[in-house]
Amino acid sequence: MNTKSKNKALSQEEIDKIVVAQANDNSAWEKPIRVRKAKPTTVSLPAELAARAAFFARLHREASIEDWLRRVIEERIDLEEAAFAGLKRDLAVNNKAA
Image 1 (cartoon, helix red, strand yellow):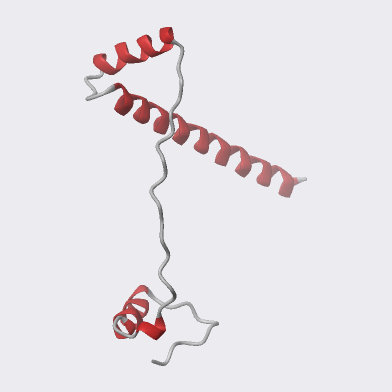
Image 2: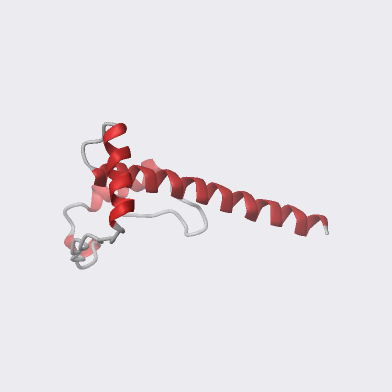
């Protein structure tokens, strides 16, 4: 199948058409990649901190302490990423002004 020149980015619709046209052509595809599921990571918490976390998990009516901790960690990471992005933006603005 003819593809657009490498200088022009393909639209999602154009990519979809190419994929559908090549779906049954095994020579158009790379060798399959095998992916293994990652082992869950465990984190040790001191007993007092675990008890405090369990209290707040119950207070927030989470199904499990793990669900509550996951939500809290995700929220904190979102805040940290936003702060980091803001800092990078401020540094870029200050460097341009200098």
